[in-house]
Image (tube, rainbow, N blue to C red; front, top):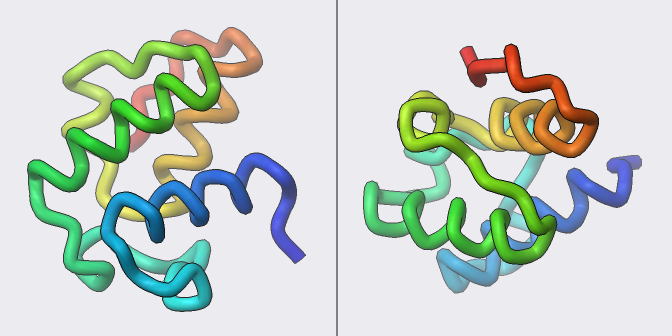
Length: 86
C-alpha cells in the first residue's frame, strides 16, 4: 500500500509519460519508465504545481527514480532543505 503522496507522484508520472498507472511502481527508475530529460522537466514542473513547492535544478537533475522523487518531495514538504536527493 502506497501513501497519498507516493500515489499522487505515481499518477503524475503516468500522466506525463502517458502510460498506464499500474506500470509505475515505487521501485521504477525513470529509465525503465522511458522518461527522457524533457519528460523529467515536465514531471518536476507538474510536481511543483501540484504540491506548491520548488525543486532546485541541481536536485531535480539528480533524481533518477520514483523513490528519490518521493523522498525529495517529502523532504521539501516538511521543510528539510538539506535533502539533496542522493
